[in-house]
Length: 161
Image 1 (cartoon, rainbow, N blue to C red):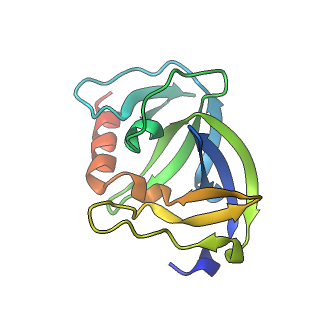
Image 2 (spheres, rainbow, N blue to C red):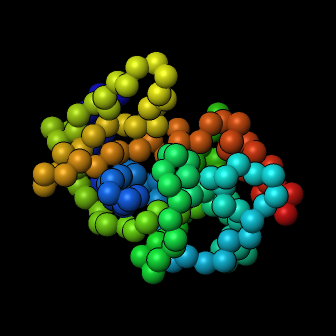
Image 3 (cartoon, rainbow, N blue to C red):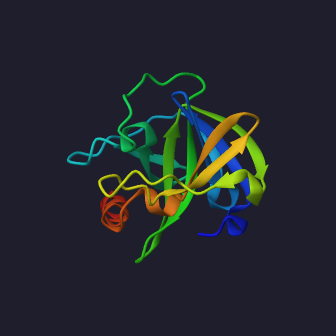
């Protein structure tokens, strides 16, 4: 993807020592941690579902999805509710993050392509690397974080409730 099309407004957040960004148009809302109902026989990174104003929304812990060590939730831990599109449908999904940082306008010239780590590592979900104030924000393609099968699985789980 060309850098020009990556410029825009991003919601930034942290997982551990790393900073990430999601294009703001994908973000529906940010909520504090709430009770998550676990769903049996789901992958570890799927924490379960929440009831958000009468809508059942699946919740994914991004730390676990990215193979980071789990951590205790704190008062800064929150859920970013995003709309994710797969080939077959769209779904609202909650993403547990350590803390939300800020909303940034990121210019194309501040974005470098995602580095190549060879064929063994899938980095399709990384749009690019934004260099801001001496830090690097990893810009995520939220639609590519979950596979089509995982989104379809979440849709099926949601309708089973």
